[in-house]
Structures are given as structure tokens and as C-alpha cells.
Length: 139
Ligand SMILES: [Ca+2]
Image: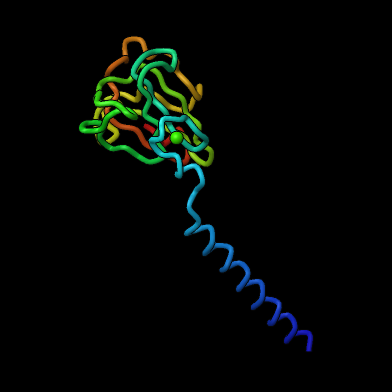
């Protein structure tokens, strides 16, 4: 009797756990709804054409392995080698931005400061960015 109840309880927990995990696996993140809408929102990595978060913006909710051919929001200006400031608003991960495409070369941005108002000598050199679980993995 007790064993039967225990078995039933385990089965119920398994079903509930599976349902929860299935939901998590397919649930779209609300943050992704605003990808490239010109507003830097929670869950995004945002870059600007000028220092101090001014000028054209690119608010990215996804990995961007190559800025070539990509423009800023509502702009014809190429994003490649044109970034001078950035903010990270990622929630469950951190953002890393790189000198070269495909996350190569110098790491220009990690989440160490969450934002960078002026990349200085690294202005106009970014070519890719991605979200990753910990900044250690940026390298
Ligand atoms: Ca957005």
C-alpha cells in the first residue's frame, strides 16, 4: 500500500517535472520580443555608433557572429567596425564582444562593468558578439 502510494507520487512528480521542463524548453523569452527594435531592453546586448550611448543603436537579443552586412537599428550604417559604446542587459547570461568575426581576436567587452561609455583605442573595431553563461567563457 505504501509502496503503491510512493510509486504513484513519484509518477505524479515525474509528470509535473516533465511538464515544467518542457515549458522551459520551448517558452519564448519575453526579452527576445524586442530584438532590434531600437530600445535597449532586459536580456539584450546593445551597442552604439558614438560614445556615451548616443547615435545609432543596435539592440541584440541573439548571438551575432559577424557584424558585416548588419546595420544599426533604422539606419543604413554598417555595424561592423563602428561600435564606440555598449551596455549589457543580459539576465541569464553575459555578453562578450570581439574584435573579429566569429568571436575572434581581442575581447573588447565582457560583463565586467556591464557597460562601457567609450572603448577608446578599441573604438570602431568590434565585429561580433555573443551571449554566454559566464564571462570566463568569453576567452
Ligand atoms: Ca530591444
